Image (cartoon, rainbow, N blue to C red; front, side):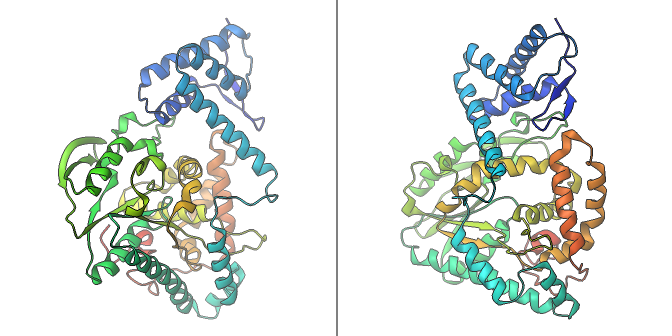
Length: 446
């Protein structure tokens, strides 16, 4: 029986062999189909390791695909067909994504709201703010305040339009859902829409979906001690769906309470019931995920999807990526509101992005209205706050094969921050701006 010390990644790089990665991959697949038995995942990973050791001599370097093939075989032979199917499907999705990236530019994605993007691009071009160079010129000309006002006006118009659409359907609605990927501005937008609708005499009851998280110990945890709580399966979707059905029928439910300090959930804590003239208001990452509202009449719901759809071209002729804007936002927000080190946010972001691409973005076109929370000016505010850190991270992760995702993002964001003129004074930003959710100084309580 041989010993294996290294593994060959798909890009050819060699990393240490760590059986815990196998166990974590199996457990993640199990969680996706409702299983939460870590002990079984560990035992199955041991079988995979045994097969590798028996099959190969000392110092053999298996390719990651070979290990994954053995995982599939072990899952099927040990009676875990559902987990095996999920594992296989995930591998196939990753393969298709790699193939798509290889031929990038040859086809349009069905998951992107193209009509909305064309509208925002047209707006940006019409106002001469569609490139970083043009943003820099306005800052140099002392027009930052005007840029802020112009950007905020577009966002507020979106929020107002979404509110009007809700009012048009209000007689039939039982719940309004504000959804979108991480740090898209859901909390502030929810508050703003509630303000508008309450001003028209409508009544809302808020449902905090965070209380439906499973206990922290049941989330997949990697070799670095980082938990993946970004997927919809991190939530008790079955209980959420049951409660939404009951609430839409006017019945009382008792929602759980999740203690973020201990990472534990207590069931049946807070009674909630909708009166005839009340509507449920939900702010959630995963409100568009099918199992969230499975079986609920679509006419009873109105779903607003958020994304910072900024159309801003950099010097290298590429556009600033929305995921990078949200990464920076989350770094700033988490460091203040959750005592979370920005570096931890960067290292965790691959979980965020993987879940978005699989569980959030594919359903974005099912929304009733799309709001862009992006501000062309916001990158300028981020430069003085974080450029030093991104310079550190770009150096730190440059040759780290296990942190390739962090390096790629740090390098890309650093190039953007270097190209923009930084603005330290944020006094031009309204106190009720969606950006205040991330940079601080908001009139709202988060």
